[in-house]
Length: 221
Picture 1: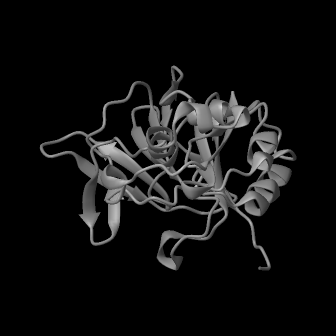
Picture 2: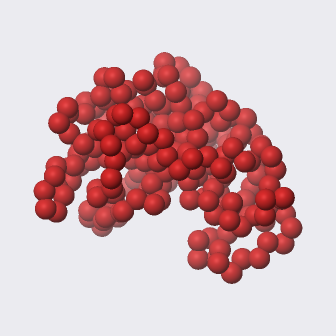
């Protein structure tokens, strides 16, 4: 199976459309979205004291084009979806939002665990560079988003776990060693800080060939 994996859209419909148009030409078997499709307007720190006032647009920009573009895509929910679900009463949610807000927390294959990443045990490897190196996952790879960075790490068991940063070269398949375990941060569709790599970005995971290929678009905005 060849999976095109994208994540962290944060309500940017135009960027999502551009990425999906490119993915259609990449001969993949399945497209996987790892969550944070929406942008929640209520921050994590403000959420406990928030009182809903009657309109979901107070909480997030409910653009139905997002659902139309992601029709047929395998969905995984992110922390934005979880916060929106907690803040907006059921009766006030448009029907079209429910598949996005109620997506499963992960997708697993024999080769990899695919998840958003917000609940993983993150560790700062160096200033500004985080990796869920201690996360539990079956198979060869943990594929995630959340940190808005195109990055690849090989885990070499030890005490503590040794983490090797594997250089990312966009457009070039990176082979995953048969005896290796890898953490794959696929990058983000939304804009991100320059030091986290270009965006919009995504990755193609070829499970049969055991490769990951990072991609990005040059957009004029």
